Amino acid sequence: PIAALSILPTVASAFDYSYIDGGFLYRNTHNNDSVDNGGFNLGGSVGVLPNVAVFAGYSDTGNYDQIGAGALFHMPISSVVDLNLGASVEHADGRYHSDTGIGLRGGVRWQALPALELDPELRYVDLNGGMTSARLGALYRINDSQLFLQGAVQAGDDNRVEAGLRYAFGR
Image 1 (cartoon, one colour):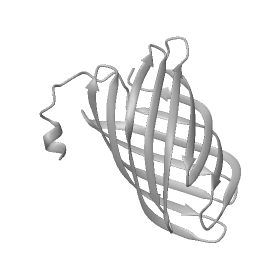
Image 2 (cartoon, one colour):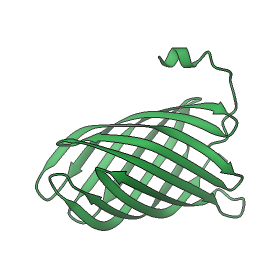
Image 3 (cartoon, rainbow, N blue to C red):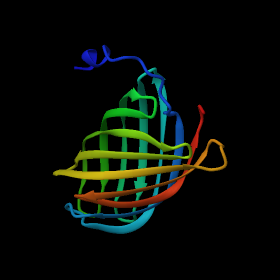
Image 4 (cartoon, rainbow, N blue to C red):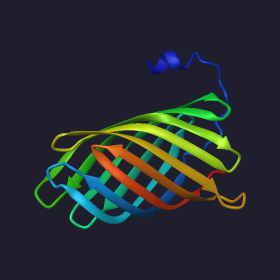
């Protein structure tokens, strides 16, 4: 299937896949640990091939920690929109259980305005039971720099609100 995508016209991507980010996280997850706490998240990504990036992230909300790492295939479908498909290995330590599983994600990155990017996405994580959520992320570039304000709202089996900063290395 990925080989079939290579026949599409080549369009330059408007996005940077090498960055570090972090900030505040409020999480409400109704799994076996029933998380309902605020905390923080840290993450990053590095472009390793023209259409592939590796990523990792860590979140801590008091009695529930989650860490994940994986790869993301990204492909421009226009000069302002990229398609993203990713997979990861996830591990969580909660009050009542510890588990390792997989994560899948798919979505788009859309340069809605010169300083504003929107990132709608679907996420699935299987940690002691599957959780599916829809997510909308946003990045706002600060004064034409490599620094962005970031935020996200995620709803479904893993509800989240996030706010923080991102530093992009390649722009």
